[in-house]
Amino acid sequence: MFTFETHGTQYRVYFKYSKKGHTTCIIKDTDAEEVTAKGKARLSKKDKFCRSYGRKVALKRAILKFTGSDPGLEELCPRTNDDFKTRRKIWDAYFAKSPKSKKK
Image (cartoon, rainbow, N blue to C red; front, top):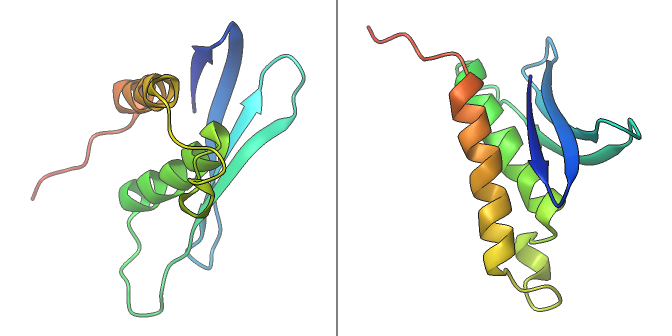
């Protein structure tokens, strides 16, 4: 779990894991406790479960929904420089708190 702030609002990001190999990323407004955005990564039967990779995929999908820049919606809401700054804040907060992968 980690937090970030944008436009004067504090948000909390956390991850849930299922036994079926699904990773869900949830972004919540800390004051209202509302789910602002949610992203999910699903594991294929052929894939090997990796929490680190699942977190990144789920976070990427949640960020796209959070910033309103889902790939199918680019004509309606094109990406702005502000979206880039917000995405950068979230990724910086994630990498500051995320567990480091063990190298073999």
